[in-house]
Image (cartoon, rainbow, N blue to C red):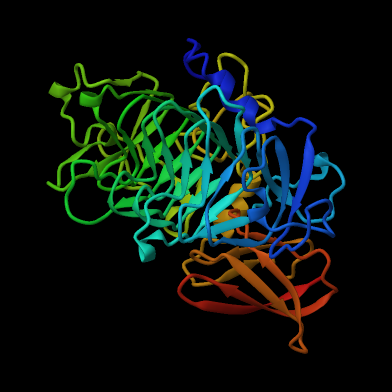
Length: 451
């Protein structure tokens, strides 16, 4: 464990979030639902949540396309993790994430920082193409919101391929993954104008493309307000990880955070937070980097001077779990003892049996790391184990859906592929099957045996 100084009272708002749940009116949401949402059998469409206040939505796994964005009422709680047959919240599977897609601003959280908090937990926002319509933002937050155990991947927008946190808002992001997102002009995956806390989150390989703009960044643009990072990873975001506009009163503090070297438009390698701010200018810039932070090399496997290689399992194929020798293992801290109920994107506790806290959205597990290393061969599609019993792991770049066909050609299973690369095949009868994998650019197939 690292330094025991108190990080901030804001940590209290962070990770109690991961286990936050209170009894409330439940509304059941299913893909293409046409019902009232009173039960799984009478499941509603996700758009039925528009303006609903203090509602608890149980969202069944699957793919959801939001054609027209809508406001969420104060106190709304959106939970993934359901197969569609649960009768209690405790039956929820934390690794099941419904995938939400839109070509417009998807969701708005209204109110102000004192409003009842809106919760997003266990959702995936993927393959949104706002560029096609010239749209800017996927989620906009005006009030109080907590985004936990969510994934934002392969989204495109003109500005902010993720979240716009407006002035006066209070936003917490914990145990989330942002990867493969692109903006065509500026502001990255988060544009912050309010107060934002980011904890145990992995922000990697996001791109700010287009012509040069002083507001252009792959990671996070802090325009106003204060952003605090804890136990987080910023790596591979181009042309930079974070930009803080101190001239507008913005400030940022990094604690127990790993910050990657970046290469800016002039080809100069810098520590990502100051790719537009030199060391001599850092005084008065509103940037604080605590001594417990780690400087990361641009190379996943090789150190660069005092910058250490992060050693992700397989970043080229989107696997940002930590290898056994990663310097990010046990580099986190929880001095206030608040992480006990929090879990990572694989559903594992954020504190292991030896009281270690890792950086990023994945707590190291020798078992899960070995499985994912086995599936990281440089082929287009790998499915394992084969024969399979309950869980089938799929390794294919940007794969999002698996369709399983019997030897007679009948579709017997259609499943969203989890971020961990797995689908559940336990209900399939023993035999031979053809697995067809969908990616944004192609369809791949292979054969498996189900025991």
